[in-house]
Image (cartoon, rainbow, N blue to C red):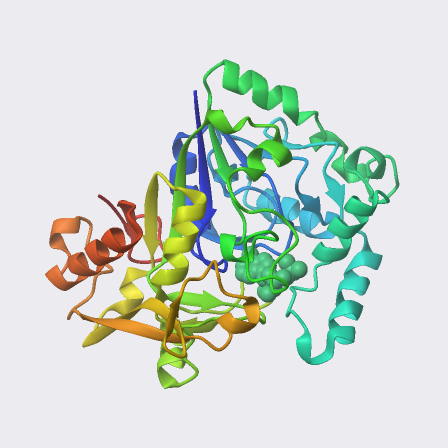
Length: 387
Ligand code: IMP
């Protein structure tokens, strides 16, 4: 029996897709349990480069079954394209890709409404992905949403038929048979509707507890939670980002890390790693271990900064006790850590990392109180160190 959840600990785009892709090799089931086509995971493997928005990255393991559960809002057009893309590479979906009949469907009119709401907000717009996420979850809460079980009976929904299958029993049976289930979180907990920088958040719960509500997996079955964080900070869309760098250094991160949204192509805002926010995310999520991604983007810096505390005037404040407005005008205290020379991209063992890079990892671990078990030093599957 084992359920592993992979959860983003920042504002999304932490590189969860790669972590999931690595873990999916040993999984029997890979599930998506919340969010929709606002998420984007780029998976690079022997088949090519795949920006996936809905279909779990586990689809590349032919032994794994991939499941979209109730909590997801499904964009039929995006799904159709993903099915076609995978088919082009000979990746079969029949009898291994399933959609819960109780998942909700994103209708075209809700995408239009998403954009209208953004226009209405004017200067206070959220910078949504425009994929109809908010209005679809709103319709669900208002109880006039459209579920897959009804949509599949329509002309546009017919193509979903081979994939629609009751997923609660499927997953409960898998648990009973001690199958390995990997839950692929979307976005990051700082965008969680209850715990993020509201209203600059998405419309679903991202915390691992959402697995119960959104996939029917009881919390006590979650044996491992891997929190994923990038070695620096990014955010796409509006909302506070205390360690944001609005200068050339921010641009350098963007270029080096290729920080452009997988879903919208928008440039991501970049900054130094925000340990105050990461500590809060770790306290909230209680990950059993961390995966730190894109360490290689920090190669060659003489010094590396990490944000260690927030201050309002002379008062030291924490992430969780601050309002969204306060988070927008926070002063951040930084710790300067020594950088390292050379490239980490070819490193395959932690002992081969420059000592300053190992120090960086230790500093992060000690600050947040969670061990780093995986470090990513490049986009390819193999560019990964296990600790
Ligand atoms: P929505 O989820 O499209 O409504 O957008 C709400 C906010 O969440 C916006 O700031 C988006 O940029 C952000 N967002 C939603 N999904 C992701 C993601 O997967 N990665 C990064 N940001 C996201």
